[in-house]
Image (cartoon, rainbow, N blue to C red; front, side, top):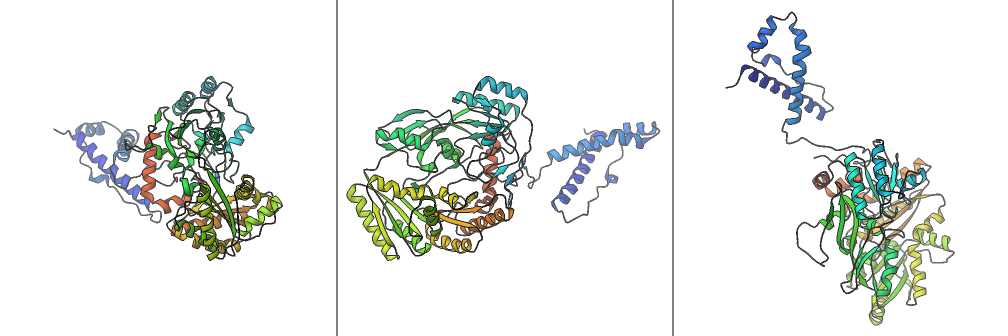
Length: 576
């Protein structure tokens, strides 16, 4: 049997829900200022106990305002929290104020909260001398080396764990105190991945750089995340093996996993996702997860390895990586050829891929980039669009490939086709490509670079590059084009003066035009650099809101306190 009081409070809750729905309706429509009235006349008569109280109280209105109105508001709050609505949303924007759709900001604003002294003392007990609060150290970790992105805050403390156990303890403490974590590798990323907009703890992985196990017969190696890819290849060379990904100098294996990087050899060997067999990762609660066995293939359960590769530190801290290795090539030939137009050069790259030749590198540099190389290195190369190739295999096979591509190039107006087999001569040719970015800075001193990273299906590459060149040529800024032409990925290095806002805005405009052109061709805003803070604004257009909501649900499940590199990868306007 329902009491009169229960019936009355039930009606009160209904009215509260009506009031809540009217507010919600008007919040959704900023143009409307018409409010729905909720009539308290619809309530049933007051229960006898309340009527009796009313008769015995000199001022019922006073009682209503001091006692029953707060109760009504409490029930209203209950309705707010319990109301079931298919359109309700959860937006976690803690500390995030950059990177949403159509954002043009580049300084990341954060919600700073002072790190508790108790946490500092507990971190000190774990890390001992491998911890610093020195301003210069914190600043260098909070400002990426080769990125124009900035944050309003820097980390409060930098810790350098020396073991997986220490990483787990650090993460558990940060989760306990709800303090943000930013994992840090080589600091070479370009999209603001290692910014600390909310302050917090930067976990520098540079002390964890051991080779834990090398299995020569299985052609795999187990390493800690702080080892660089160049150092790893020096270690592997005596065994006749190498790791085939080659991003910028200074990149570490952990950071390469986090950003799902690739490089010039990706056209033959694939990206990071194709070359990692297994990971060990510390999750946000401090648990250590091993994602797979050492088997070359497995159909056991969810593919957690691929989930974490490219997660940019937002789901966990990588502490161990098992990598797939390759045999060092028996023989290689490096070739270079010039072209009258960028479209001719791109056309040869596409035709080479269609020919079935297993080329290991196809790199394209435009005439502006060649000019920069001439200025920086005192060379006298023809300042025209240029292709660089590498062919590997047996001596006979590599030479055969070279001759086939030479014929393809001649059909596309190629000229000055030269090739090298001598190790020193090959190194000199590849130096042209490897030092391209530094050559840009030499050509335009005191500038910063905004590097685009679009990638399109191969058939659209020539069209995208040639159309982009028209836009770049009309700009007041100096821009060069460097492309991994064999897989449709190309970079434009847009040089601008960071002290001049009009130049930064022009660089952003050019970047925006190229990204949207790539997306219109079913391409991507980032082929290998990752998202960070710089590319978040393009993800909804590329992937769709449902894909981003799915990512946010995964993030919320694995990191409910949002401590793992917050404000990166997933746009802040995405709700679920």
